[in-house]
Amino acid sequence: MDPDLLHAFGWTGEARPDDGRLGRIVRVDRGECDVVTDEGRLRVLSDSQRSQDLLAPATGDWVVVVDDPELGPLISRVLDRANTVSRRDPSEAVIEQVLVANVDLVLIVHGLDRPLPPGRLERFLVVGWDSGAEVVVVLTKADREPEAAIEAAATVRALAPA
Image (cartoon, rainbow, N blue to C red; front, side, top):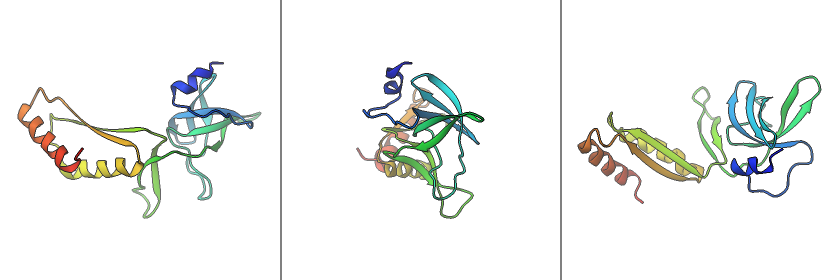
């Protein structure tokens, strides 16, 4: 058991749950998640399509993992979230789709080997700002197109003033 492992993944709380093992979700697939606990990485069962009264787990969530004698490790509950990066679910009219939870920093990365669409950048900025996390725009491949880099930087400054 390595108690520092969860601190490396961002755990800042003191109290640990009494009803199972504390873990952080690092990957979500349909019906299963990868969760890091003090004991390392586990593949656990989860219901990513939970009913409306339960919180569906997302990457970044802090969770309680219990061992079921028949099913193995599974997520019993999701702890309170500090924040979320989310969007409207494209398949539903009013349902929020949480992309990631409990983040401090949102990076919007764009390669300058293609044009920077201002509308898309603006949408990504709004999603980031709505999360409450710090938002940073990263422009890569500036050495390939110096003029494009200058133009893109001006677009970023116009849409996301410091």
